[in-house]
Length: 70
Image 1: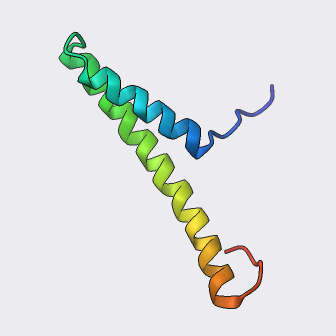
Image 2: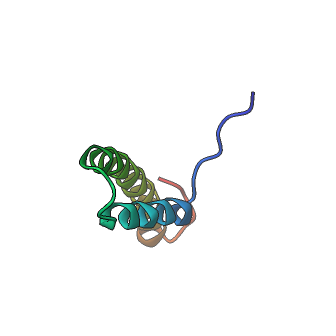
């Protein structure tokens, strides 16, 4: 079985937007809200890690003027 494709930042941000809409819904139970919140914090960490990797690559490009990856 093939490996799971990594989410793009755009896909992750879209999922976070959907989670915010669900959390704003007064019909969502407190238990479900906690589950959505926990899932959202994992997704935020994924986004943060991915952005950090991109930022490090860009910092190397800026400092050395080359295309070396960090």
